[in-house]
Amino acid sequence: MQANSNIQKKIIKIIILVFLTIFLLLPISVLFMRAFQNFNGEFVGMDNFRSYLFSKGFKISLRNSILVSTIATVISIVLAFVYAYGVNRSNIKFKGIFHWTALLPLFAPTMTHGIALIYLFGNKGILTNAFSLDFSIYGMWGIIISEIIYIFPTVYLMFSLGLKNVDNRLYEAANIMGTSKYRQFMTITLPSVKFSLITAFFSAFTMAFTDFGAPKIVGGNYPVLATEVYKKMLGQQDLEMGAVVGVVLILPAVLAFIVDFYLSKKNVSVVDSKSVPVKEIKNLNRDVIFTIVNAIIAAIIIIIFGTILLSSIFTSWPYDLTLTTKWFNFTFMGISGIKIFGNSIFVAIMTAILGTIIAFIAAYIAERSTRDRMISKIIYFLSILPNAIPGLTIGISFMFFFNKGANPLNFIYGTFTILIVANIIHFLSNPFLTISNELKKIDKEYENISETLGMPWYVVIKKVIIPISMPAILESFAYYFVNSMMTVSAVVFLYFPYTRLATISMINQVDIGEIAGASAVAVMIVFTNIIFRLIFDKLSVFLKNRKVKSELNTSI
Image (cartoon, rainbow, N blue to C red; front, top):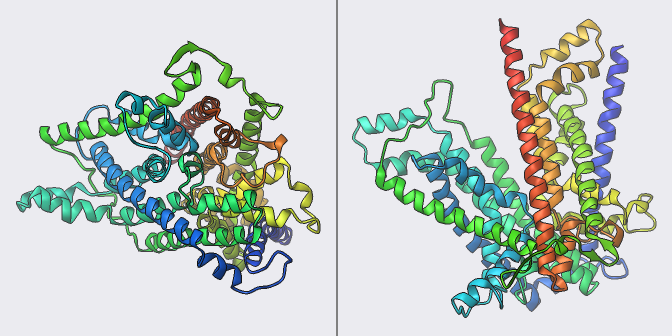
C-alpha cells in the first residue's frame, strides 16, 4: 500500500516537472539561444547584443523606458503612501469607498487608462478643448500618467499592509516619553513600511518598464523597449533582435525578483499575539488634509473609469449624447465582438481551472512531500520563476519554441491551448505562493496519521487539505481569471484571427481609430472582473466563517 502510494506521488511529481520544463524552461532556453543566433540559426556569440546595444535606437528606447518607469514609480509611490496613510492612519470618513476606488485599476487592462486619457487630453479631448490646452497626451507624459494609474493600486496595497502591521504599544510608549509626532513618524511609522517601500519601488519599476498596453495606446512616436520588441517581432520581422530585447526585458524583473526574495527572508514581523492595533487619536487638521488629498486621487480614478463608461454608451461622447449600444456590437475582421469577448471568457475560465489545479499540486509537492526533496525543490524554483519573467518575454519564447515544425507540440500553436498555457505560466507564481503559504499552516501529522491507518494519501487531500485551504484555492482561481481577462503582453504574439481575445481587439480598434469600441470592450472586461471578484469574495468569506465554526466545534 505504502509502496503504491510513493509510486503514485512520484508519477505526479514527474508530470508537474515535465509540464514546467516543457512550457517554461525550454521556451525560455530557446529564447536565449535565439538571441545568440543569426537569421540562419548559426551561432554568432554576442554579435546581436553588440549590434543592438550600441545602436542609436536601443539607447533611445532604453533611456526612455528607464525615464518613464522611474518617474512613474516615484510619483505612484508618493501618492500611494499618502493615500494608504489616509485610509489606515487617520479618522477620515468613507474609508471603504476610498479603498475600493483605489483598487479599480486592478480590474482593467492597462490600455484602458490610455484610452481614457485620449478622450480627456487627446487632440479633440474634453479638457484639451475646454481649457485650450497646448498639450499632447501622446508620448512621454501619456505613458507616465497611464503607468501611474496602473501601478497605484498595487503599491497602495503594499503600503496598506505595512501600515497595518504596527504595534500600537510603540506609539503609546513614545507618547509617554514625550516623543514628537514627527519623530514617531520617522522612527516608528517609516521603519514599519521600509520593506514595503523597497519592494514597492522594484515592483512598480518593473511593472512600468515591461508594460506594453499603455505605451502602445498613448506612446505615439516615443519609443520604449516594450513597444520596440513588438515592432521588431511583428513590424520588421527581425526575430533575432526581438529575442535580444526579450532578454533585456528580463533584467529588471530578475533584479526585482531577487530583491523581493531577499527581503522576504529578512522581513521579520513586529506584530505578535500581544500586539495592539493602531488607534488614531482625533486630529481635525490631519483628517481634513487627508480627506482632500484622498478625494482628489479617488476623483481622478473615477474620472478615468467614468470616461471609459460614458464613451462606450454615447454615439460620440461628449459631442453627440445619443445613447447607443453600437459600440458593443462591433465586428472585427468578420468576427463579432461578442464572439471575441466569449473567447476571453473561455480562456480565462480554462486558465483559472487548470492553473489552480497545477498551482495546488505544485504547492503540495513543494510543501508537504517528504520524499524526492530535490525534485520538490526544482518544482518550487520553477513555480516562482515566472515572477522574474515579463509577459512579453513569455509570449516571445512561446512563439519561438512552439512555432517550429519539428516540435511535436507545434499543433497547439495558433489554438486556444497555447493562450491558456501561456497564461498559466505567466501568472503561476502568485497562486503557487498563496496556496503554499496556506499549506504551511496545516499540521503535517494528517499525512502521518493517514499512513498509520492505511488511508490513501489522496483521501487526506480530498477530505482535509483541500477543505482547509479552500480560501487560498478560491483566491488563486479568482487571480487567474481576472488577470487572464486583462492580459495582453503574454498573448499578443500568439493569437490567430479566430482566437483573438478582447484585450487584443482593444489594441486593434485603437489602431483603426475606433476608440469608442475599445472603450466598450474595456467596460465589458471591468464589469466582468468586478462581478466575478465580488462573487468569489462572498464565497471566500462564507467558507472562512464555516472553517472558524468547524474549528470551534472541534475544540469544544
